[in-house]
Image 1 (cartoon, rainbow, N blue to C red):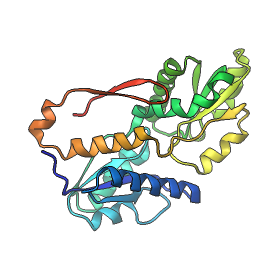
Image 2 (cartoon, rainbow, N blue to C red):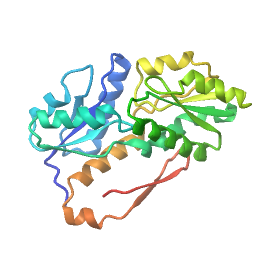
Image 3 (cartoon, rainbow, N blue to C red):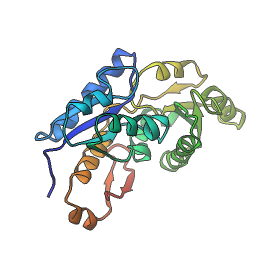
Length: 250
């Protein structure tokens, strides 16, 4: 049995980009459409209000799904602090993380025929764990798209995205495409057009894999403990790439 009385809060990074804000609202509305009996809210971790703490303070027990790709500072520090500040009534699920690699592959698909190598462009973090997770995702993406994939960072870590593009060309790969490892358009995605690649794919955005991941995390967090223990690994197939992933729902 699943307790659908608990609100769902999407913890998202703020953006000054109107387009980024629209993508976030579209994601919230799409998730709400998948969970019609659940109240779905947005809690901003940076730059915007209502902040995550403000959103949670107006709710009872809630489930927070971090709409983040790696376990950087916001996930490791800001989100737990916001939950504590709001009274500690919320539980926090895992990030979406590398379960979204199929979505990145889908965004790359229109460019693959004219691509010799890919740079996976991530925001970057001062937490090495976060950067290591990006590198691991790049390895997985390389297996899916059958192209060399290297990681590049837009801030706080090396190699930078332009350096990664240059390195790919130096290795003999003439046509280089950037795959944004970013959830929504904004300042970082705008910079990618000036990093020296031949093409830049779309950001992840409101991809079915994102919505599925959020819904699964909410349902798992609200499931009766006995049922949660009995859950088996599930698999799904990206309709565009045909890439099959597995993720534990425990």
